[in-house]
Structure formats: C-alpha cells, structure tokens
Length: 343
Image (cartoon, rainbow, N blue to C red; front, side, top):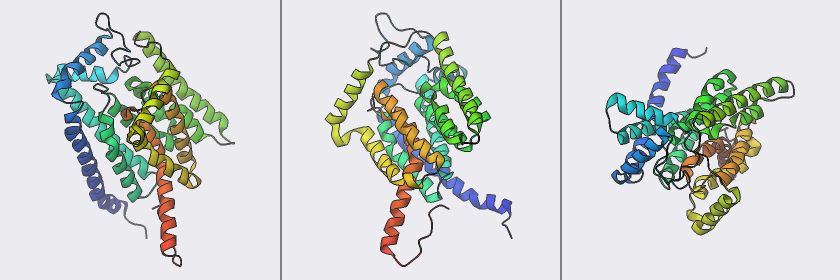
C-alpha cells in the first residue's frame, strides 16, 4: 500500500524548515559579519550611492570614463538599480539599507534554489553538502568590489533558470530569461545549454527551434538594452585582460580565490563524469565554456561574478564525491554490498 501523500507532505515539513533555517544562517552570517566589514561598511556608502546615481541617470561625472570607474559594461544592468530606487522612494528608507535588504533577499533565494536544484539530481545528504559548500565560499564574493548589487539576484535567477532547463520547461524559460538578462546579461547564452540537454536524434528539429527561440529572446533583450541605454561599453582588450588574470593567478598562487572556489569542484567533476546524466554532463561542459568567456572579459579574481559557474559544476562534482565515497566503502568492506547514494 502506498503512503498517503498528505502524510508524506506533513513528514517533510521539518526537513524543509531545517533547510530554510540553515540557508538563513548562511545568509545572515555572511551578510552581517562579512558584508558588514566590507561592501556594506559605512565608509563605502558614499561611493555606492554615487555609483547608484550614475547608473540610474546613465550619466558620468565630467571627465570620467566607465572603465575608470570600474563600471565598463554595467550601465545596462538596470533592473536592480530601478527596483532599489523605487523602494527608496516608496519606503523612505536610506539607499544603503534598501540595497542590503535586496542583496540579502537575493542571496537567501539563491541558496534555497541551489538546494532545490541539487536535490533534483542527488540524495538529500549531497544536496545539503553542496549547499553548504556554496555557503563556505560566499566570503570570497565580498571582496574586490564595492557596488555590484545585481549579483545576488542574478545568481537566484541563474539557478531558477537551471532548474527549468533540467525540467526542459521551455515556456517558463521564455518568461524568466528576459528578466534575467535585464538584471545581468551574462546569462544570454544559456539557451545553448538548453539545446545540449534537450536534443535527441528524434527531436533535434524541435529542440533546435526552441533553443533558437530562447536565444533570440535573450539576444534581443540585450540589444534593446544597448539601444535604449546607450554608452557604457568602452573598448576592451581581451588579450590584456587574460594576461592580467594569469599574472594575478601566479602572484597569489594557492591563495587565488578562483582556485579556492573552483579547484575542488572541477577535480571532483572530472572524476564523476562517467556517472553523470545528460544534464549534469552538459552543465559541467557549459560551466567550462562560461568560465572561458569570463577569463577574457572580466577580472576572474572577483569570484562573486562566477558563482553561476560553481552551481553549474556542482551536480557533476557531487557525482565525483559519490564515486569516491563508494570506492572507499568497497575498500573498507570488500565483502558487503554498498547501497547506492542516490535516494
């Protein structure tokens, strides 16, 4: 006899409450005790408010450049800035408090969605472990910048989009992706991942059509932003950027933040590739592709901008961890059957 669905839902309430409390602790511990000493420190408020006004008006002070402000290619990331300004006027709260609340809500949502995303492909223990790993790396995201208020919300939208890609929810992606591009346009190529996950020899025409439709939506949203919010994009030397990233990696060595963030997940992902399903393999490959783009367009030391890459890697990384655990168990108990971790 199957278990009553109402009883199943009732029994899962304590677990869901535990997960919510866990990610709330991770969120507040980082926002208050790391962010409070870095990007939210009172000494940063004037610079952050100036940056907000520049982006809100899309106008630089006399004699300045977007690159000089460290804001090249940021003027079309307008959704968070508009929402913050609207909330400031509606509530009368100071701008720094509005941004703190938005960042905190975005981070909480991103962690909750990350747990949901990881739970889709693995056991409860691995989903919790992956969520805790993301939380352990969050302190790296509070350094080397003072105003990138879209990153937490963008990460939440990235994870939501990945959930929808795994479900192959084409229509829902049509609604989510334009919003995600307006928040931060680094998600514009996600339809490539959708195609890699959805395509089969029997449905390649339909999958190609859906992927191209999604790509048209993301690219069109990006182009319209560039048209209606001009300037903000200045010349960028990709070879110089790559050289700076490599030089800093050599200088910092084992302290290099991207190495700390992605070294272990990448290594575990390679170990786990043979166990991955179609989505997990495609996501790991797309993570490498996305990281290659970031390496020539951004300062890679700024881990905050690369957190979607970590989420993309984690399903394959957890397969690698699963493989290592099972090998260890077989070595310790060679004559006993080891149950699968996929529950």
